[in-house]
Image (cartoon, rainbow, N blue to C red; front, top):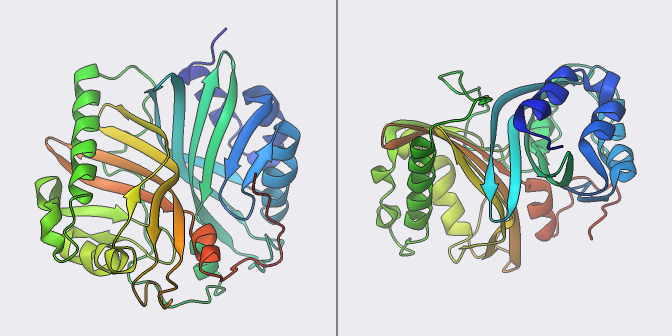
Length: 325
């Protein structure tokens, strides 16, 4: 028996009210010895019991009415693995402290990116990022410089991100090749001019880039270069690609994650208000892209900001014990 995408969706969508069903959800989907890799401060959970204890229980205690709202769902083969990935938001009232963050009592949306590798009828490997820094900003607990970008991150403009039926292989391949060509362009930065990467070949003039809290979102080339790309490349001019766990395309969408995805040296001052540390760092990253025609139009981006900033020597969540394998 194989856990296909529709069966997976039926379990996840049938248990949107996470507070009521996370034990059942975990038991039905996850292998007993699943390797579950989450963003900081949770980091690594060895097996189903640890997933419940370290990931779900703190989250549900903090948000007793927690609900999952999925915006994008893709599946595909990467290397020898079968993967399903989703992104969207958890939503609920922040009633109890989470990882040392003080509860607000108000409802919040928490962006998530989620990749699951399937073997047979169970999930055996997962990579999960929550946008905790955006939650810090919303609850006035962000200790660094105000972000340069905006705070919006909507569902796809076309409202067609949940792909349950098989997509056209040619369209999927077209999307994947466009993203890979764009990434190759990013790696051609000459260290001087942003134009050296040729990004206008790949993105529409008013594309939407939805970044993590602390960086924020941007619209169009000039705004993106101001809010993210320029400061990022100044801070990490020697960045190189890293350990990609999954990159799949389905229809007009592509999803990718690396753990870590980037290796770099923190050489430039004032990225999110932090002076250059000179330290060698890694970045856990997830991306979801949407294509229209021959151009990319939307990009949902997750960076494990808590883990990255900890590598600079700044612990945003000091009251939680990390568990790194």
